[in-house]
Image (tube, rainbow, N blue to C red):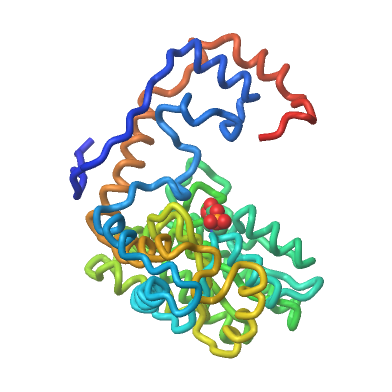
Length: 357
Ligand SMILES: Cc1ncc(COP(=O)(O)O)c(C=O)c1O
């Protein structure tokens, strides 16, 4: 496979250790084969999540030093607000401590009991927040998403016929439509710009608000550039603006594509929606100029959200995943080496109630 070289040099390293196979088996058994229960020290290649785990750049660390930790009117907030406005194109920004904080604030305003939120495979915290407000998440993802062998380029797409049927049959009872880019609950599958434009048209026709769960907006934009012929020659920023122009706003866990360890926000176009969200945000997350983040976090986010749309970085990042997938395919687990595991697994099905992480 052709190697894509990294577009950066590594200046800081953190020592980790590799434990032997027997120890790994033991640790996994003790964790009931649930990686959430492992000690991080025992993990050499950590694929649990990309959430808050990315290495920050020299620019981000430098910005952290100039952070303004004022409670109100902080310069760090202003810099972050400016960066989000530029990259996303939304005027009103509400900071939150992370993505689920944004979901909680947003759904408290948007959802009344019994309302529906159609979308493409809502992320688990997203679905839980919808249900917490007594709403229902309706999955309208295309069928290809369930076929792991399908090479459909945009398996995160919404089935527009299904979506329109759900909207028509539940007229006046749709809280909003949510497109998750990329579709994390199904392996980070992207959504095409053609599909986003189509969904946007349907929502406008039925006067239903449309929002993004934008945690991986930059990766999604990269896949649009690579896989949708019409956008091959467009840069990532152009594609992001085009995507955002289709929706009324977004919820963002900044821990992914804004490459920070902590943070999130709600970004909307409409001033009256902002005014409704603001008091809840103050109550649940913090004043509107920090929302649960420190000045340091906001400085890092302001830089990370711009660096996250760098084409070379996205190309290298997605290549890494492809490389890993191809290597795994080549070395498929045959079951030869660990005949002990399946039987131990059966014994592990009943996890003691007292065991919690
Ligand atoms: C698509 C998506 N939405 C929302 C969230 C929740 O964000 P957070 O973990 O920052 O609360 C996540 C987290 O992984 C996510 O992947």
